[in-house]
Image 1 (spheres, one colour):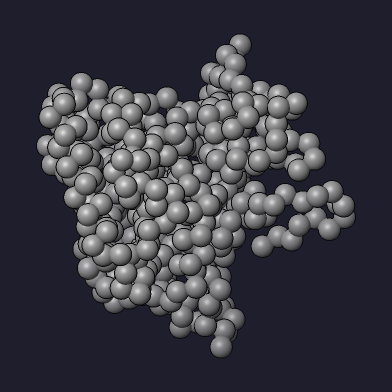
Image 2: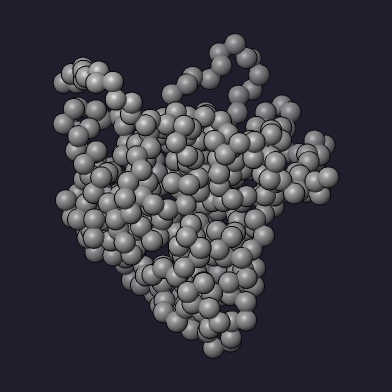
Length: 93
Length: 306
């Protein structure tokens, strides 16, 4: 059913945006508070990864969460949703 | 869709793999923004196989400016009133070409749905095009500076309803869509991603027009600390102000998180939800009573149609 669509080369550039990490630059620069992880308290429930609005938290089942501080905006949503208080917000220097 | 790395023998994350891959870090959303949270859930269901149609709203800023795009999926930016119309066109074109595995999603704010995009939304629902229309409801025009929309709740401060707050109740778009007789209508909240995920999974299986009304607390416009985004969303459910339900087969089906609050005694006092938000600062007792009456009426309506 699907036919190949031929693209006519007219030389006109289409303004097509490409997926890119960090369209707004290194958003970690905005941060005024920083979430830090206490690995002893973490029970690997994945809630911080599910809720993180910037998608920078990666929870490994054997290790716990790692946070990419280059792009973390420091909003603190992960700290508020953590059921075992393993995350803590500290002031950014 | 990318397959998980086969060479690692470590226990794999139980989350859908797409959740990590599609929404890219470094978008231009404010800290604590609910929009990328919702996109993560959507991407967990559809992966890269989706076309998002975004009218003028916060999301067109969040996705990013020209050379880059913070979503690893197709995004079409359209004029304010035309989200549903453009999405209908795309879904018909896909059908004509025989592409069935790509989902068209119109993703519009409350202004682009309840006020400006209402006509094209109503038209697309009546024609029953195969798409999911998601209205993320942050209850004002946040992108242009917190102006009142028809979705702003009673008593809320905005820059165009200063001092006494809004004097009218919120427009219930989900009810309007139920009246259109579309196959699937649901309300969801970003505070309950599992529930939202289940609703998207159900919507994925249904052909025709699907509408999801998504409650999305906005830290900037609602005047609360960015870290309370999820807490405010949960309190809206726990106080009974926001009811999670699905409508299909001519009946309303109450969703799990909202089920305990059918009993008014189990609901938390509304003031707990209001006091977290600066936009309800200085609200009077009478107005809280008025909100309570409205909430009870809404619940009665839901119970009648179950």
